[in-house]
Amino acid sequence: MVSNDRFRELVAHCKEYGFVFPSSEIYDGLGAVYDYGHNGVELKNNIREYWWRSMVQMHENIVGIDAAIFMHPTVWKASGHVDAFQDPLIDNRDSKKRYRADTLVEDYLARLEEKAGKEIERARKRFGDRFNEHMFRQTNERLQQLEQQMNDVRRRLQEALETNDLEGLRRLIDDCGIADPESGTRNWTEVRQFNLMFATQLGAVSGESDTIYLRPETAQGIYVNFLNVQKTSRQKIPFGIAQVGKAFRNEIVARQFIFRMREFEQMEMQFFVRPGTETEWYETWKQRRMDWHRRLGFDPDAYRFKDHLKLAHYAKAACDIEFRFPFGFKELEGIHSRGDYDLGNHQKFSGKKLQYFDPDLGSSYVPYVVETSIGLDRMVLAVLSASYAEEQVPKADAEESSSRVVLRLPSVLAPVKVAVLPLVARDGLPEAARKIFDRLKMFCRCYYEEKDTIGRRYRRQDAIGTPFALTIDQQTLSDETVTLRYRDTLHQDRISVRGVEQIIQEKLDWRQWLA
Ligand code: ATP
Image (tube, rainbow, N blue to C red; front, side, top):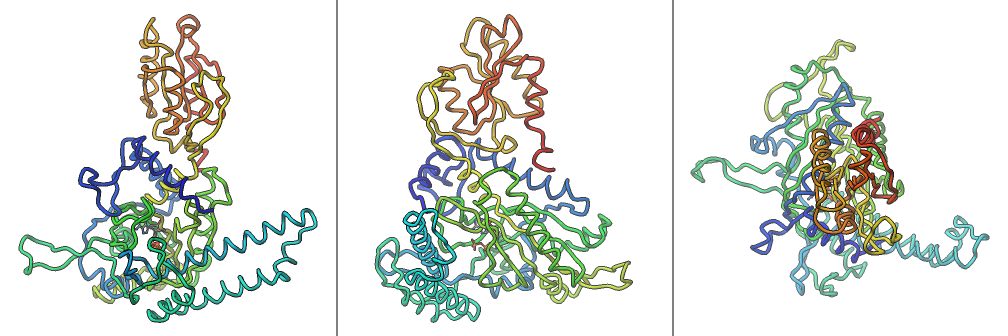
């Protein structure tokens, strides 16, 4: 469901609590570039670690690399990015805003889908238990018209994208009567193609040097290193190479916070397989990646697969894992069966063999590739939007007010794991609390705070998603026990100081997320 207010609240929350700031904010920011604050960087590091451990630690046949951002310019010719890494753009003459033409049509389709959903919900309410959705879909005239309209638009969009028919795309926008969300007018320019790569010069004297590009994806660093890695790691096919790193795209539309950035981070894994087995591996990786998302414990219905309408220049089959962001279902991760497109082209352009000798077959071939590619920043946004909640709470628990904002982050991802809070800042409590803090900080990130009422301190920890709080009070001094407070349930346990480490360690055990 579209919820702009909720999205605005989340963006404000991210700034207020040190997760994400606009880049160069004192100069009014830079379009679609963001910085991570002290909590944001921890969350991002933890997500990266969850991915890396799941991919590299948990798979004997996946190894990591860290390739440079700058690559030889021919890489981007071979990869097809110089010729084909482009999006169709359209401008509205009144608002002077620029849009991706295909996204305008996709948003229009999402509105039609929402309309159809509402028709069904209305009927469900009207008919109660007697409601049969299948029958309703087949017989309701209004719904059938909507479905027909959606199919028509989908077909025309797909045709236009596949054949690069920019005029057809423009006609479709006209025929759908799509207006600029900003100005409300239909005063559109023609649709044009726009290459998304950032170019720069290598070397001190421009003119003498070559144009090189900031990499628009991390994958190519893996392909050009395929043989280096395979030989030095002694991997046999099927095996994968994983990498996390920055990528850069001069995006046309950049108004969705860290969903679409011009500088962002990707977590990619390229899996090299024997030709003929790629479909099987594509299905396997689709499922494994969906499981990885669902293991975090958010609403399972917030994820869905979506096949691509238009295949990228390199793809044989491709789908997205979409996530229900506050502004609707959108791509979070791509899974692509890339065939031998990349290795084959690098072989051609470099003149170097990029083949694997398969001992089982007794022959050599260019391996096929199945890729999983997820934006780390997009994952940060997905996790934040799934965790963010405003809720009423009982006044017990020494809470100050009856409502709170809480980030229900999986504990393994939380920026701070344990808050150590002396009830008051005197009577020996800070000293006792410091001792516990100094022990706990050896194995997880903790936060010590003694100022303010305990209720306010709990609230601040809820707002950054700290799963556990330890409160040290007078009783601690006499019987060596502390209160362990759980963020989600507000439940409190009295536990012995000696048992604290073990309990916290159990709760933060990576095994729960990797199994
Ligand atoms: P979109 O259709 O949203 O532009 P894409 O299909 O071009 O995305 P891919 O090239 O498949 O994206 O990139 C893989 C992943 O990288 C995406 O699923 C997304 O999570 C992330 N990603 C791509 N572009 C951006 C961006 N501009 N900002 C943040 N993350 C991005």
